[in-house]
Image 1 (spheres, rainbow, N blue to C red):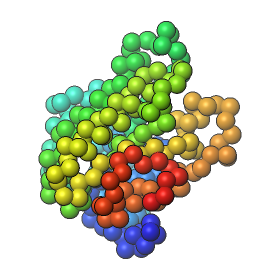
Image 2 (spheres, helix red, strand yellow):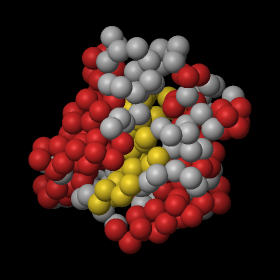
Image 3 (spheres, rainbow, N blue to C red):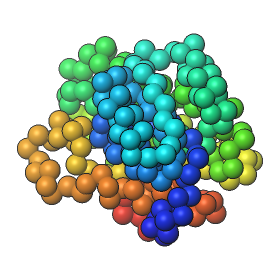
Length: 249
């Protein structure tokens, strides 16, 4: 299924915002989707990394990428509207949003987590997704198959010790995706997904589990069939909102 869509370059000319696009899953997905013809809006705060990815996409694809340098911890309504205005000016319409950016910070118990760290995690992982979604939805009205993909985690469904604010933020994202899915139900082919990639070989995973052997984890490329399915017409008739790596598509 995924390979047939890839061969058709079904994303040719589609405009996709990817947050956390400077590394890990976001970086890989952004570059792969650009190879399928999509115009990628790269949002992250590391300008040097964004420049490198932008240059790579320009050199190896015919797509039209855009950089949005943004610290999601400091995102507010004014900045969110500014981002929407920039995208509207550049592309007129936004087809897809992939909320990938997230931070874990320090693994610790509730007693020892600082308010500053708690608030940072909630702002980056949850509040920024809310704000961007709020201001970007109007740009998706003209899209043929609008998609908003939130990135989930196993601790979104069951809290575990030491996951603290990260677990709370992902639980919030889960509920946010469910609310949005219900609100968008009247819009034809507008799909909202909450995707759990599960254990994947990334720097974030290595920081959380430093003793883990990364060679025993799947590579990011194994996630691509799921993103391709969620973005394609193959998911139009699906009633599922919560998608996990390992699910049959």
